[in-house]
Amino acid sequence: MAYFLLRLEPPRPSFPFDATEAEKAQFSAHSGYWMEQAEAGAAIAVGPVFEPGGTWGLALVEAADAAQAEALGEADPVLMAQAGFRYTVSPVPSLILRR
Image 1 (cartoon, rainbow, N blue to C red):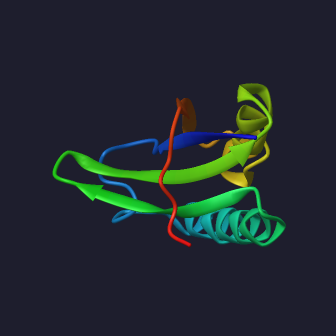
Image 2 (cartoon, rainbow, N blue to C red):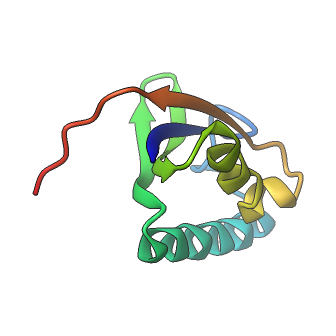
């Protein structure tokens, strides 16, 4: 197994502070999806990253390969809703994990 960082880019820099009701509902499904992935062992850590230039989402996953990591992102309800979100997937060649 290998590790990958999935970076979720929102549809605009001001997100989530100006999220619409539809986006809030999509993010509820998004959270549920990633909780399931964490329980299944695929997701190691998931959460928002607040930077001065805007917020983005982080999902650190363990997958057999990049295709499987990309499939995890593609199955996210916010991507399936085609609401302007997108993932970039980057390999993490080594990782120190706490025991």
